[in-house]
Each structure stands twice: as structure tokens, then as C-alpha cells.
Length: 91
Image 1 (cartoon, rainbow, N blue to C red):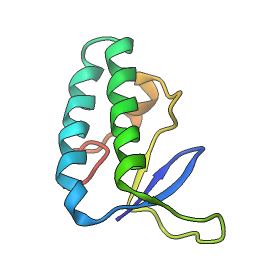
Image 2 (image 1 turned 90 degrees about the vertical axis):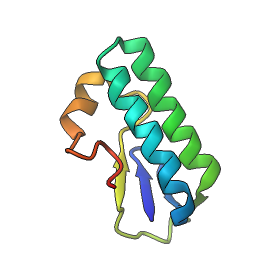
Image 3 (image 1 turned 180 degrees about the horizontal axis):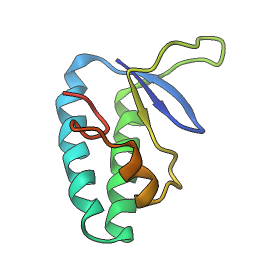
Image 4 (image 1 turned 135 degrees about the vertical axis):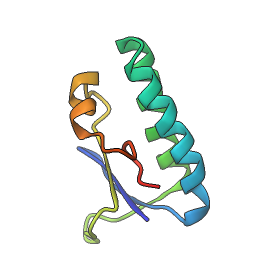
């Protein structure tokens, strides 16, 4: 799976990490109902885990992204617009 963090780059993740990312995605959705601070922590958690689990793709290697995450400075309102029925991470 290729995950793009907007404004940062792409990461290649193996399928083993998808379940964990889906749990973090659920936490992000729940945090959207709370407050901006909770949302910011949840977004940082999911992006941080992508960085930990994933291998960064080089600038010369541009692939179609399976998942696009908002930039770290995104607002809760901006992320709500990006959500699908599956959240940010499909599955």
C-alpha cells in the first residue's frame, strides 16, 4: 500500500500495518467529535505510525497513492471533507 501524507511525501507500507492504521483511523474519527486538540493528537498518531511502519519513497519514485492523509497542520473541518464511509484508510 502506498500512503501519501500531503505536503510531505509517500510511504510504502506492507499489509501487516493496515489493521493498526484502521484502528488509528477510527480514533481519528472519534476525535473529530470531541475538540481540535484531541483531533490534532489523533492525526499526529496516525501520521507518525505511517512514518514508523512505512518506507519513504524517493522523490524520483512517484506512484499512485492508495491512501492520502491530510497535512499535519490540517484542521478538523478540512479532514471531515476528506472522509469517506471507511474513514481515511479504506478497509
